[in-house]
Length: 117
Image 1: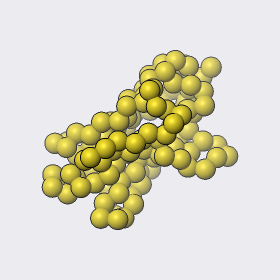
Image 2: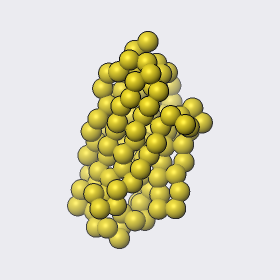
Image 3: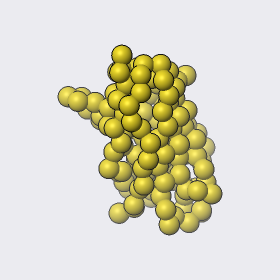
Image 4: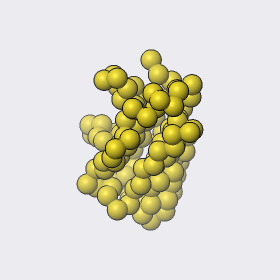
């Protein structure tokens, strides 16, 4: 099991911004280069959904966050950062870091993001 360290999130008013970070400490650079890493979220009563993922070659976003969220990779720090702008109440959810390595999926414990109207 890969240890994922999450930080960020919290409470913000509609239209505000928050940042989520997720790192995989202890990962060697060559391994991280092959990883796909990003964030999913799960709102109360809903299924978990992909928010944004980043690999060495590309990034992928849910349609609902395109133009508002930006994911970036820091290879030296072995982490991804999700910058969330123009937040909406419907973005309220628990956000889970996700790492895909050698075909196996690993999850973080989750960070709560609450957007008030």
